[in-house]
Each structure stands twice: as C-alpha cells, then as structure tokens.
Length: 354
Image (cartoon, rainbow, N blue to C red):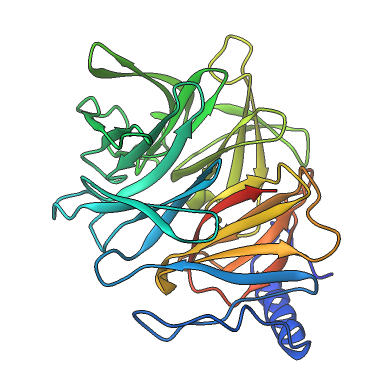
C-alpha cells in the first residue's frame, strides 16, 4: 500500500494520485443514494473494503459543516453557515443533532463561528467554542433540555488570538489557543493549550503547554523545541494522552498526564497539514467524515474484518499542502497511508461504535 513520510509532500501528491486512479479502476463507489443538495457532489472513494455512504447533508439554511461529536445514539454536527472565524459578522452557527441513521432530532443556533464541538463526559454537557481567530466564546449546552449558557473568554487573550477545539480527560477540560500572535522571530511563546474551568460564572484558564515548549520527537527520540504557530484540533489517544494538532506546522503534540505535575510532551511530525485525528475505539462501527465544502457528512465501515482498535486516522482539508484525503498514521514514524480520496475538504472525524 502506498505511503508517505514527513520528508516532503510531492511524494504524497503522487501517492494520492496513484491510489485514486487505482480505487476508481476497481469500481469502488459510495452509496448510490447520494444526492446533491447545494452543488454537484463529488463521490469519495476508498481502498478495497471501505464502504462509504452518505449520512446527512446541510441545506441552504444551515451549511458548511465542520465539527462532529458522537455521543451514544446521537451524532452532533456543527454547521458554520459561512460566518467569519473572528465572529465579526455576527453570523450564528447551527448545531444539528442526528440519530445514528441520519434523521434530525434537534437544531440549535449558537453565537459565532463554531469550530470546536465536544462532549464533556464528566458533566454530560456539550461544549461549543466559537470564533477561533478572535473574540472567542464558549456555549455550554444541556443535550437533554437544550438549555444553553454562554461565556466570554478572558480578554485580552495571552496569545492574542481565539480558542478552537476542546478535549476532556481525567475530569479536566483543555482548549487549543488558536491564531497566536508570533514574536519578531516568528515564534509562538504564548500558551498553546490551556486548562479551562468554569468558576463563579466565568472562564478561568491555566496554561499547560506553551508554543515554544520542549518535547521529545517520537521518530528520533531527540529533544526539540516546539514552535506551535497553528494550534487547532484536539483529541484523546487510546492511552489517554491529550493530543493537539498544530495544523500549519504539520505535527501532532502529545500531552501525557496532561495538566498534572507529571506531564510530559512529545511530538510526531507528519508529511502535510491535517485536521481532526481519531483513535479507533472498537472493531465494530462506522467512522464519520465531515466534508465541509461538499456540505456533506459520510460514514465509513470496513467490510468483513471491521476496524482495528487503536488505529489512528487523520484527514487533510483543502488548505493542506496535499489536500482532501483521509489516511492512517503510523504512530512511531508519522508515515500516513491514504485510504480515502475524492473528498473536497474533510474537516471533522468521529466514530459510531457498534
């Protein structure tokens, strides 16, 4: 199976071209029930065994899906509706709750450009962050009653930007400090990840990772100084590590024992910019892929064998050096093996177990 490493993106480009031609020649297609909504839809294709089906689409009223979160029997998708990432145009985002077969359960508008949507398993609340470039806000949602509470992030932010994705681990909430202001040498010396607590009706943030922190490079074992210029998506690894995707830097940063005195940091370099990354939790189930520019959400199953738990999947959106694919990440080298191509701009990944 073709692969690529962080040595360069040209080899990746050739790899994806080859794999796309291969899978198309094999006649692998998505579900024949796919219908265009707001534009002609591109049909994504996968390597043999990957069954890709349309799950849901946006409309002219809610469009531009970005984030996805699966909680029990509900799939939550955040639609950005064309709003600006600093929220200055005051366009609200729409969060849509779906059943596992793609039927709408509920819809809710939240303020701003929603770029982070995560479920807090410790309080059973849904957290939505908006305005990742500036003027960030947090909306906390009760998914049973759909009651909401909105909080403004402290100003001025120490990193000069907004706040993006979230992760929850060991009863703690973490948030990516996105769009940082770099110093005169082009280095981010401000917080890149912070622990976030709601106290007395206000958000209290404590830095847990700085943009120029020291880390261990996973591939070489050497100590390196980070320069996290683009903190973006967050996820939880199979071992409980909190993982930050520094998208523009094409790397994943792992926080082991995050937010504690025993925290250690490691870095895995990749061959191109990526967005959401997930660790597969179970053999049986469907991966969820959000394709923002196609206004579509897909599910992916693997015929017969199912998924291998612990496998790392990642996606490259349209602004990546080599774009619009989903692949498997080798955890020790950063090598990515493309498995799904033909997407337009994948921006969200989730998993429906069972």
